[in-house]
Amino acid sequence: MSQESAKAFLDRIGADANFCNGLVSRLAARRMELIREAGFDFTEDELEEAKSSLPPGALGHVAGWFCDVEKDEREPFRGRKCGGGVWH
Image (cartoon, rainbow, N blue to C red; front, side, top):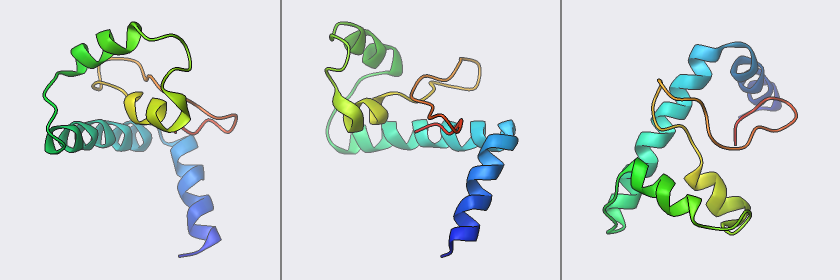
């Protein structure tokens, strides 16, 4: 593990849209696996509907990040993008 490797990763995410999109898609799939393993059963659309009923900021930073990733490659990203252009 090195700072150079971490910086190279961030550079690639900023420069390679296919790489970034692939990671975010895999994250979304894994997120739903974790949710189901925890005993919950709903679709991405149902999650979006439930989130839309909450006031802004109700989820907080961590919960909000966990809930805000893209649904699939055909739809735009949802989530937070820092000033450096990295999704988190």
